[in-house]
Amino acid sequence: MSGHPYGPPGHAAGGPHHPALKALYALLPLLTVGLLGLVPSVVLAARRRRPADLAGAVVIGAVQLAVYVCLGLTPDNSQGSPYSIVGGLLLIALAVGAPVHFLVMDRAAAWFPGRPAPHPAFPAHPQPYGPSYGQPHAQPYPQPYGQPATPPPTPGGNPYATGG
Image 1 (cartoon, rainbow, N blue to C red):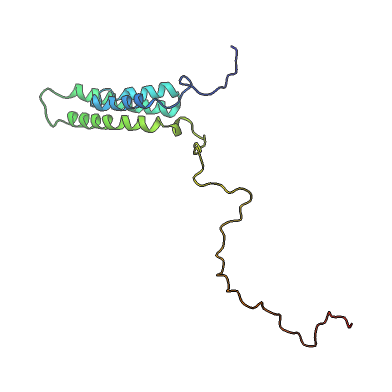
Image 2 (image 1 turned 135 degrees about the horizontal axis):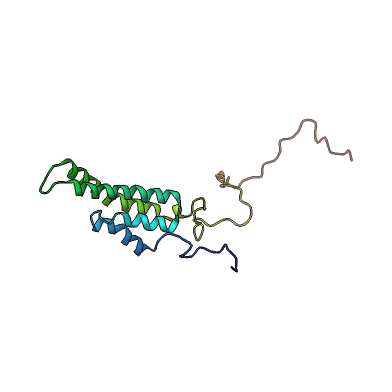
């Protein structure tokens, strides 16, 4: 094996799915009314190979199995039996929960935890050149030009004046 083992992540290394593929995986449980609800979580668990994703796939798989068991235990032409009610509710939960689980776990923040959020391409406000001294303070209105102010005379004359 040659080459550096750590490189930039590509498609094989992992990362969120392409938006079109993400939409297909999210719509699959909805279009099949939950019957293929296991597919997105299995795809996510197979690509990421993390315990949390594996646990999500196991939980969704258990719900899928419970739907099939309720479907098998429901007698023919029976409306309102407990098995059909529980199976229907689980099927609705699977049809809604599987896409939500997939979309939440297939974000970049979930793929790369601890990585800082990307910085914007440009700053929101232009940065000042040189040191920044904070916001300028309000300046008083300029006084009208007039006679220059003369200092008041000191008693006893000028103390710095030399007798000359």
